[in-house]
Image (cartoon, rainbow, N blue to C red; front, side, top):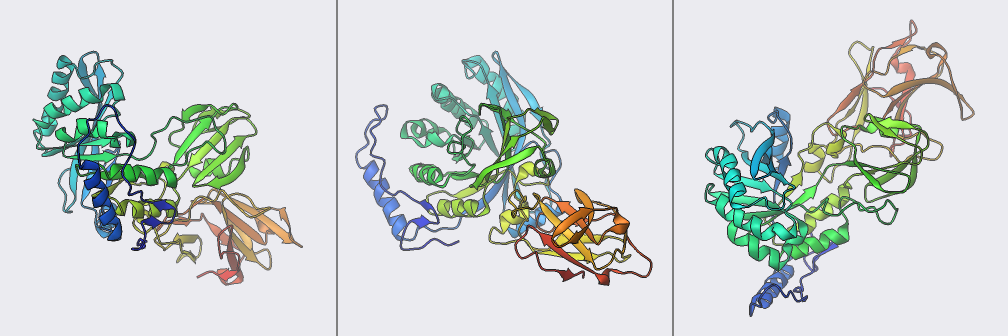
Length: 489
């Protein structure tokens, strides 16, 4: 989406170009600085505030190198840089030790530049004392000896920001180029004045920066809140060093108890166990990609026990919301956007890599039979994802339903294959009756989502002697435009 050149506003995001007038007692006044910044931003606004942004990704906790499909899609997106987490250093006492290590990709045939990222974790009062800092430099030196750039990821509390800045100055002496991730509020002048002299670039991660409040429909923060994003992007335009906006593309599942208190994140979940778990009641309307379920009967998700009254909040980044956030970043002084994290096939990845590269695209589903005429395959040949089907028409189940219809009971066997489940039934005057497959005139295959360029294949579908797929029509329920009966290709 291109911004309107006549105003600094894009679909819910508006860039504030006035200078920050709030006094900061910890920062000495610099005559003319606010005026220069205000004029620069105003001129930028008059010019349409539109400029090309370099897109990059963070890769987190991954061992395998990028495959050919990923490399091809990244090339199509004109991505030239990947920020790859190589490990996590933990501070214990006055020693920094590797808590986790991840393989750093070797050079490949692509033109992608890989930048190592080290996550720093500490619960110590003085993680950057002289002894601790020497230990940290020793731990980083083998890595910086092989690379000309390093990125550090550390959520420094305000009380340690000055110590962290001093540590960055020392670390910069062992690596030619040093960048850091940043918390959103580090856009304040008092923070930037500490950090800017010691690093080459800042990467504010504009998400997951607030503690989870009690779960209420008006208090649960989406991954991207347009108004908050607007302000954060505007505030970061005060940064004098190059900076890139870190935006989320992932999905997150949070468990709350009956009182609405967060019990943490659930890992390694999948869409099927949310969508097709009958004990989970969808409550409230979807808001900016956030859906809330209430547990009606004790169950589990990803081996995590759930109790009656517990609530699950699944937060996704709306496709249009993400598109607008990127467009809003284009109107600032940002040099680029970095997306967290490079999508894969897991539910926690949110959108597929193809969809992220084609945010305007929608899914395009077709159904075909195999050459042997013993299986069916539904394929999304579009560049857009069919997103998880939590919201349905009245009287329908959650998810999507590939429904086969015959005028007579010609089905003999129907296995789900890649689909979640199959249901055989007959229908008369709108009423459905479950029956065994040989007595069915309808077969329903259930599924929750289908990413761009992906496919689902049924198990064995066997028809009565003399019958063939030309006698069958299909429709896809709960999808826009999918309720008309069509022949199988």
